[in-house]
Image 1 (tube, rainbow, N blue to C red):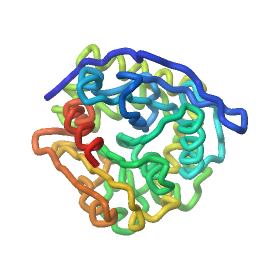
Image 2: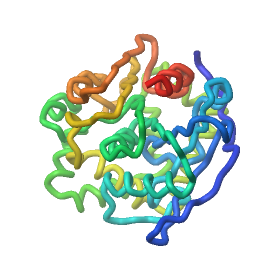
Image 3: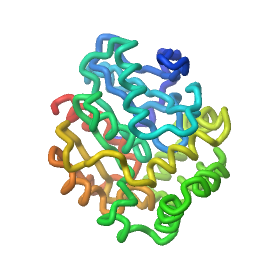
Length: 289
């Protein structure tokens, strides 16, 4: 079921952290709903949600949080994936979010998994998730251009971070559209979706590109936790038509063998945009885990 019901956030704000930084956030859905943290994709921000038409029905309070240096969140230049989990711990406590679950879309996947590894969330859904690209089992499957960036990140992370800092909102839009299957381009270029997505990109880069660059170095490095030891339930959602070279190269097959609690679904008629085309199924499954 495709939906382009891209509603503006119903609530927005910032939450202070113990070190004086703030995290910017947006919310959709009933305040009494089950809280679900959205870890957005690359270079997007709290402005882009999903499933707004089904949140009341599914009983979900969707909360999208900007990572440090993106959107309204204070920069943290040398942060790690585990720093993100610590930020979410403080955010969860400050906002009294009980029973928190998480969705990680695309590059948001390792950030959601960091929260799972530290048990800050009770369950996770990875949707078109980026894989641990530097893991030996995955590295051999990569597109040559992506493999070069993974190798650069391993050999000289500072140089890689400087390279990624050359990105812009327009370049990101062009890259996403250029690497997408026609089924995904139909979603991304629908006028209401494109407006919301491009606004989220502009907002993400409003402080510059350093936040995105740091995110990408973290995503392309070895992750500081072992997927094989996860105990939190993890849903893996992929579209068989997904042609993105920076998502999982085998649509989560290797991830499913590495995560003991994983349930993997590959939708035959969907692409990388299934966060929006399959929102109800993703949320219903996540709440049932």
